[in-house]
Length: 217
Image (cartoon, rainbow, N blue to C red):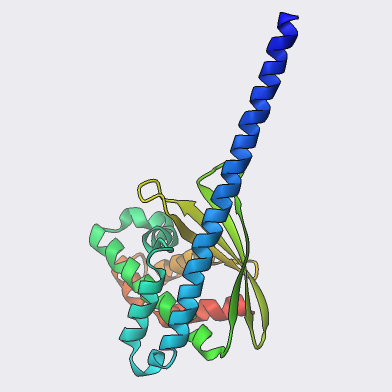
């Protein structure tokens, strides 16, 4: 009888812990979705507000984009992954320089794409916490433009210090942007025969635009 009682308590405890874990995952899913929705709405509003400044006052445009995205995108983490194994060869100054250069190239390339696409909508479809790692999540979005609809997936992670959910990679139409840019960095490294200064200096909106065009096709 005592053995059956212990077994019953164990089962009830397991069910309780499972329910708590499920509820916690649901709460985190809602938190990451809400974060992306709020920042996406802010981004769209900024783009619509500053659309004309992309050509007339690029610095103002870039400043607005950074303000809209700085609380949701970990640019330093993304840039480090783009540099890949070559990051170990880079000095602190080179790493900082590439973060800023990479960030600006993205604003220019993707900003131009969205500005020239006319009216568009970005809808957040849902968010899921990784069942193996509760500090990782994926968010499904859909971008609708005059030329069609494009599925987008945000890979997010929860920063241990700020406890904020931050974007660390994007998949557009099935294309892993982080890997695509890392391949492009490696190509540039080979082109410039391992000269990281030249790789960083030559990294521009044109390179990013080329990558955007390849993703679209």
